[in-house]
Length: 242
Ligand SMILES: [Zn+2]
Image (cartoon, rainbow, N blue to C red; front, side, top):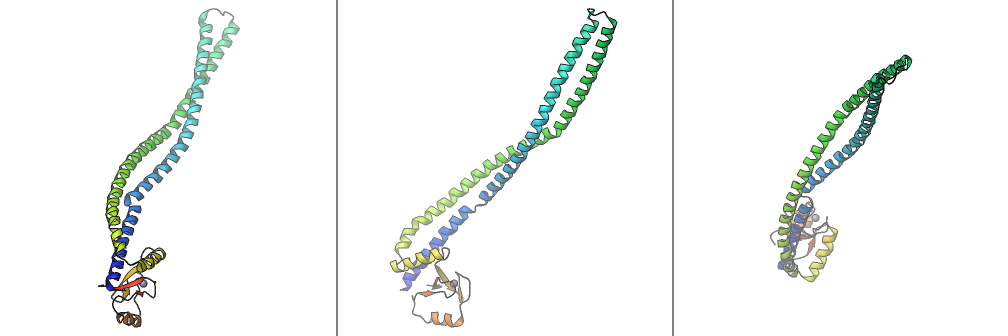
């Protein structure tokens, strides 16, 4: 193994690390987290809105029913009243019964009016809450659109960087011997994408552990280009400065 061969391997690792870094960055763009937060928020508000709308519909139905009853009662009272003063009925007892009837109907109408008013009052805060939720949901919709557009822009930027890096890869791969490439691919799959580490100041920058003094001494006395592995993480160790 010659030193340039190890240098080529290290260059490939550096390139792949950059590609992995950009891919990771693409997955973890802050806009993506922001977007899921908006979607969660909107989902929860939508749930609250549905529940509220169901309660509101039930109250509205009760109000409509009371209004129908009120109208029927008022109509009936007007009819009886018309007959009472129409002159067609002359019997005192019948007239008195009709007067009592009108009085009863008007009392009932007054009760129904109160009921309609009470139901309207019951609806008022719910209507306001619903309008507030609709406003917030519309606002979230706008924000979602804006963040989506920002996310697309950020993704396109990372994709452009990734495309440039990927374009360099075939050449970097071609510079590495088949034997080293096989080792590289195997270690990379096993060790989270980092197969080659630098030995810097007695530490492996793959696992960040210091090598034992004896091991360091042994490595330093190997001929340049010797293939060495970190005892601790198993990565190919390249002495910094190769
Ligand atoms: Zn290590």
